[in-house]
Amino acid sequence: MGKRNAQRAGAPSFGPPAVDPRRRRLLGCSCCAAGGLLLSSPVVANAATPAAVEDWRSRLLQGERSLWLARGDDQVRTTYWTPDAGYDGEAYKEICWLLRDVQANKSFAMSPRLLDVLCGLQNWLAHGGHRQPIHVNSGYRSFATNYRTEGAALNSRHLSGQAADITVPGVPLARLAGMASLFGEGGVGMYLNKGFVHVDTGNERIWIK
Ligand SMILES: [Zn+2]
Image 1 (cartoon, protein in one colour):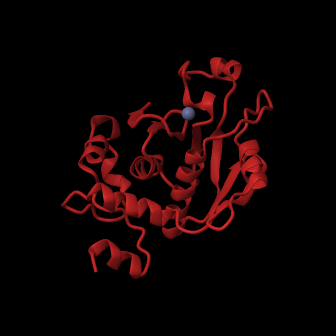
Image 2 (cartoon, protein in one colour):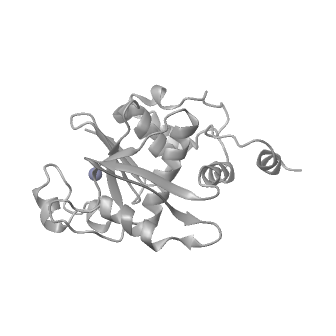
């Protein structure tokens, strides 16, 4: 039995595998000096293979996929995907509504990949004892809202439903950003001045403001 199969057969492990060298470079860059705070598990000396990273990601999304999100006084806690039935349209709509452009009061078909990134992060946090909603500062933005948003890029991923600005009470921004960077494959921005982490499903990049 190969190593990966042996891992599958045993008790689930949610610690990250050794970091892909490309990711390690990102985490160690000057814009993310908090890299040392990011991992709750010791960083393994040898870099993981892409297959091991993929295997770890898929274990964080194993079985039903649920999200518990909060925004102001609103909350949604629902299962949006199951292995047997696939996507639950009503649950998906509820999540999209919570992630709507609140200024325009307009919902958008959010990227399923973004939901998976948030779900994986939430499962990873839950494994570490943080069982609470992810707080959403911003999800979809219409062009007009994005234009009015201070510091927003004109081609922001928020415009296409591929980004969310989030916090998790009790979890330092640097840790949340590091987890998002390790779990996701897109953009991660840590906004120290505004107190949230931006995650998106675009090209891989990381920044701090
Ligand atoms: Zn953002």
